[in-house]
Length: 108
Image (cartoon, rainbow, N blue to C red):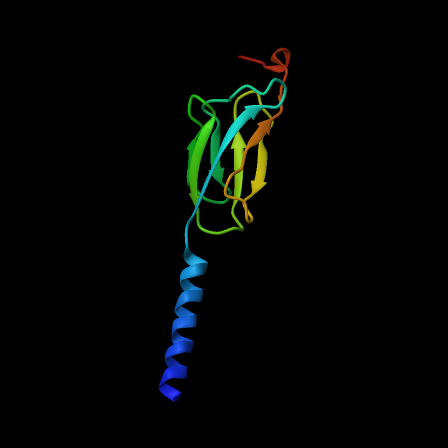
């Protein structure tokens, strides 16, 4: 009986460790908050890492994170950056706001 209990405890510990290290696939669409059009080539980076991806021509993206505490950072030229906590979500659609007016850009 002790061996069975010890085996069950080991199985529970291993299951817990595996659950903590499972990768999570996140997908979604990035759009312009002003007109709802898809935003291609938006950079999506997992905060505090070098892991990232970009949205495709239709604004769609997929990225794999290590856990639900991951934060995704969305950036694009001319748009305000946006951060999203993954949490329990597996689909994260983002509407990005304009971040700069064209007359504010200085080219030297």
